[in-house]
Structure formats: C-alpha cells, structure tokens
Amino acid sequence: MKLNTPTSPFIHAPITVTGVMMRVILALIPGVAAYVWFFGYGIAVNMVLAALTAVISEAVILRLRQRPLRPYLTDCSALLTALLLALAIPPIVPWWVPVIGTLFAIVIAKHLYGGLGYNPFNPAMIGYVVLLVSFPVEMTSWIPINTFSEHSLNLFESIRFSLFGQLPAGVTIDAITSATPLDTLKMHLAQGNTVSEIRAQLGLDEETSRLLSVIPIFGAIGGKGWEWVSGGFLIGGLWLLYLRIISWHIPVAMLGAMALLTGLFSLINPGHYAPPLFHLFSGAVMLGAFFIATDPVTAAASPRGRLVYGAGIGVLAFVIRAWGGYPDSIAFAVLLMNMLVPLIDQHLRPRVFGHDR
Amino acid sequence: MASNVDYRAIARDGLWKSNPGLVQILGLCPLLATSNSAVNGLGLGIATLLTLVISNGSISLIRNWVRQDIRIPVFVLVIASVVTAIELSMNAYFHDLYLILGIFIPLIVTNCIITARAESFASKNPLLPSLVDGFMMGLGLLLVMVALGMIRELLGHGTVFANAHLMLGDLGHQLNITVFDHYHDFLLAILPPGAFIGLGLLIALKNTIDSKMAGRKTVAVAREATPTPGTSAA
Image (tube, rainbow over the protein chains, first blue to last red):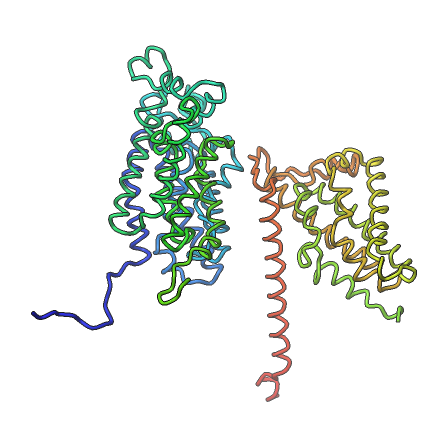
C-alpha cells in the first residue's frame, strides 16, 4: 500500500481577516432580517449611518496615524464594529446617536489603543456604553413590534425621523415607543408582581389583546418578536460555529452559565426570577454570545481561558439583570470581562509540550 | 547664590516642562473631580494656587529651623492651616461656589503637588524663588484645570463659563457664553469618564507639541551644522 504523504511546507486554506469579517457580517443576516420584519426599517437606517461613519472615520484616523489605507479599510473590521453597534441601539433614534457611538468606537476605543488587534475593549460595546451613559432618553426609547404599535414607520418615515427628527403628522414619539420585555419585567417585578402574573397579563394572544387594548409584550419563550430576533442570531452563530470561525467555548460557557443561574434561581423562587429560556431569548444574549463576546481581539486566548471568560460574562449578565439598575447587561458584562482577559490569559496558559506547568 | 536664581527656568518648569497636571500628574483627584465646568476648575485652581504660594512661602521661611526628621508633619500642619484659612474665606466671600466645590476645598491638603513642592523646592530654597515656584506650579495646574473644564463644559452642556457670576459677581453674567443654542447634553463629558478621556487627550496634545518642537530643533541644529552647498559656493 502506497501512502502519498507530501512533505512540508503545507499550504493551508487561506483564511484572511477580510474573509472572517465578511462571514461574520453574513451570519448577521437572519437576525437582522427578523429585526427589520418585526421592528421596521429604523435599524437598517442606523446600520447604514454607522457603517458610513465607520468607514470615513477609519480612513481619516488611518491617514492621521500614517498607516496604509487599503489593507486596513478592506479588512471590514470597522464595518463589523459599526453593524454590531447599530444592532445594539434602539431602532428609532436621531442620526447623531449611531454617528457619535461609531466615532467613539473607531477613534477612541480602537485606534487610540493601537488599532485592530491591540484594543483591550470591544469597540462596539464601548460605543454602546458611551451612548447609554450620555443619552439615556434616546437610548431607552425602544419600539414595540410592528403589528402592535399604533403606527409603524415605513422606510421613508424612518429616514426622515433619523435625519430631521420629524414624525408623520399626528404621531408622537410616545405613541411609537414602549419598554422592552426585559424592562417591563423589571418594572413589574419591582411593583411586587410575580413573573407568571406579568407574563399572563402582557402575553395575550392578538385577539384578546386587541379587545383589552393591551400591547402584548411576551411571546412563547421570550419577548414577542425579540425571541425571533434572538433565534436569527442563534442560527447565524451556529453557522459561524460550523465554519469554525468562532470556537464553541465562549458561547457555550456564556449561555450555560446564564441558563444554570437563571434555572437555579427560578427553581428556588419562580415568582421573582424568569425561567432560563426567557432570559436566553430576550435582549442581547444571543447577539452577545455568538457575535460580541467571541471577538478574537478582546476575548481570552486559550480554550480554558475562553470557558472562564464566557462563563464570567454569563454570570455578570445575570447578576446585572437580576439585581442591577439596567434591564439588560451584555455590554457591561463583556467590558468587565475584557478587563480580566490579561489576568485570565496569564493564569490559564496552556501547558507547553514537554513542560509540567 | 540667591541672586542668580533662574526664574525663567522655574516658570518654564511650572507652566510647561513639569506641569503638575500634564507631566507630574499630581493632584489628579481634584483635577478630575472638579473640572466638570470651567468655573469649578477656575475656583479650585485659584484656591490651590493660593495654597501653593502661601505654603511654599511659609515653609521656605521656616526651613532652617525645622528638624529634618519631623519636617513632613510640620509641612502638613502648615499646609493644613493655610487650606483651612482659604476654605473659611471662600465660605465667607464665595459661598455658592464653596457649596459647589464642597469637599474638594479641604481636600487640597492632601493634594500631592503641594507637599511635593514644599519638600522638593521650598525646603531647599530662599523665600522669593519659593514664592515664584509656588505661583508658577499653581498657575500650571490652574491652566490645565480651566482648559479641561472648558472642554468638558463645552462638550457636555454647550456653554463656557456658565455660573461665572458665582465667582465674579455681575461681570460673570457677561462672561457666560452659550456656544451652541438648543444643545443636547452629552453627559459623558460631564461624568467622570469625560475627565479621564479629556485629560488623556490633553496629555497627548502636550506630548505631540513637545515632539514636534524637538523635531524642529534637531532640524534647525542640523541645518546650522552643515553649511548648504549654495552658501559655501558663494
């Protein structure tokens, strides 16, 4: 039997930064499609604005730093940062919200720390937190899903609101915005209602909710509409796992830690803590687990380190959701764990072959 | 020896070369905490400047009578009495500003730059250079505080020198400039992160200017050293 074994050097599949980034952007499509379907075109407007800002600011700061434009601009990393940031902010905001957030993410969080590969904090999440801290009103004006708001904006109306702040005649900003499911849950829990009461009251089917004129906020698993968006990001994330662009460690550890903690607490006190599936399919958990926490630059490097890093994000996200001041917490959890990455990498270095430790 | 003190070097040190805010980075706590508006920065800057001048002066006067082993406690006592006097006078004459600055006025006692100047300059130099050093160091810190305060106030609220009447009376009302009308507040600039980012950018700006100047100087020296072909031919 003849074994055809070529000698080294071997050519391996050319996986470029651009290729990775483009595939991650493609993997966002199912989630974004669900987002647009349920929440209107505002999110698309934000994505375009953020992407334009990212490309322009990246080009300007590369010129200032005297770096070559072409390789850095075509690696699409700035584009991905902008898209992730746009997905994190509410669909209906003035144009300067995505623009300022993206500027901060690209210029300060990424390039002042040395550019792609050197930034210790996830730029998109820095941009999001800056916006959340600076513009609390705009950043908490979420909208209910299309079928239940009194008026859902079409593409033209979304662009007009974003650029000029004008709504169609007879529509006020209060009429088209509402609290997110996580926000609603937190508010009602604070008033002493139990989880099942809240979900029963605000999770009615369409007929009854029309009759009672209550906007149903909760769906079968998580928030109405939100569960589909989360599902879309889950599908995109699984595709990335299949392509081996991301490793399983971070998403599994993060989702596992969250499921474990939420499961434990909802078993002990089901009235006060929502069940695991509700948490996993609400807010930014799926987006965070597959697209944000897995950022290769800011995450831990070794497999064991990634398990610790992912689990840390899951634990922090649950702690902030359950007892913190903000309804959702992925950005803060990711940034806090970003700070610990050097420590994790230091202590969980893989054993070098031939050495004991 | 006292006659040939280089006052220009003292001034250059305080204002630029070893500026307390941008180079020594001493007194970070008041610098970051009270620079959320230009007036707050100016108020605390003036208080710190006065403290520095008076404490440097008194310590320079008593420097030959204080035993080496207990000099630091003595310095701290002197500084504490100066700060108490300044705090009481601010409470009397600028009461509203006093209320805004609050705990940061008594905290001037713990500002490292004051002890640092007492120990490293006033305890080794005669009265006049010590006074000048205190004034220049204080002015350097004051300028940084006002600059940072102006940047943060402009970005955060779209105004400059709002509330200036708390310090300057009626004149202050004219000084209050609204740069952008209907400005949407940018809270980050007012909150603590704005102080850290703003100071970081100011330090970066200072270092950039320094390296540009150094580059220009070496170019000039190189030009002088090598005669250009045209002139040598002539």
